[in-house]
Structure formats: structure tokens, C-alpha cells
Image (cartoon, rainbow, N blue to C red; front, top):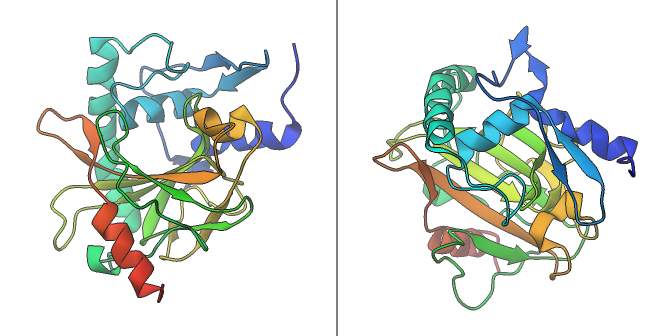
Length: 250
């Protein structure tokens, strides 16, 4: 079995970083798991990361598109665990001003949107294309609750939490996928201002870019909000991103 590089192994631990005298994420009923990549490497996914993935997505397969779908009990446990965490995460955000949606920044340095929206069933997100190494930015003030490996499909991701505020009745999760999320850039447990560098556009390793491997380098950008059944679902962000490009004078 091939061993993961030390730098990647460090990244895989980022999602469970201790902070403020305790864990940012309590794994609850979830335990560590393993993912085998196409080249045979075995990725060990910490319990905190596995739990967070179940909090974030109720239909995703952590072992890839052909993996086992989560059971109904896992779905319910993930939703319940997220709802227990949200008040604690909101408290960590404190009284820091929220970023109004109209003021969200475009999240990729010199990034390019395609001519048409890519939002559709199975892809409730937008892809922003950019050269490898371009900076990925926090589009709003966020509490970083994950930075590093998330799933075989996502590869590495940075996830920011935004508590409810004016014009935003429900919590939001800003999910930045297929990037090099080095912990020195995305500081798990800190509230970052809009425009803070959280990582870089990456390409070339399945463990980093997930199912984006072999495609033109891009950022998969998602904003998730809660549905009536408690599950999170990506909302349309095309107009928001186009406003962001205009705010940068493009």
C-alpha cells in the first residue's frame, strides 16, 4: 500500500482541529472511515471529518459515486448533529458583522464563469475556472469549520459557516471544493473576513481535487441552506457570482 505524503496527511487532520479548549466538531455517533483512491492509496478519514460530511450532505457517498448511500439513520443523525452544532458555531461568530449577500466577493482570483449557469439537479453549484495556483478567497465573513479532505468526490474543500442575520433567516454553508486547502491558509476555528485567502486552485491529485481530476482546473462553489426536511441543499448562486465579478470591475 502506498502511504500518503506527510503534507496531505496533515491536511486530512484539519477538520477535527482542537480549538477553544475543545473540538470544533463533535463526531457524535460517527467513527473514522477509509477511502481507497483509484491508484490504490488508502485515505484515512478522521471521525470528525466523516461526521461533518454527514452533517453537510445527506445524499453524498463519502467513498465516491459508486459507494454506499447513507442509511436513513445516518441521515437523521447527521441532521441532528448539525443542529446541535449550529448554536455553538453561531456563538463563536459573536457580534461580528455579517456580510450582506449584495456584498459577497467573487471567490477566485482571475476566475472565469462559463457563459451559462451550470446549476442543475446533481450539480447544485457553479464552477469557476482559473489557472492552477490562483488564490481562492472567502466570499464573505465566515467561521471556518472545515479545511482539508472532505470526500472522494470533493477531494479537499474549505467550508465556512455563516449564522442567520439580516436578510438571511437560516444558517448558510459556503463550500469551496477542489482546492489546495492548506491549514496555514484556511484556519479552522477562526472567523475570517471576506477576501481572506483560504487556499489555491489545485490540479493533479485525486486526493486533492476529487472528481475534478483530469478536468480543466476550477473551483466548485456551493452555498447550502436547510430545506424543510432538515437536509441541506445548494441554492442558485449564478446571479450572486455575476454581481461579484462586476464589483471587481470586470
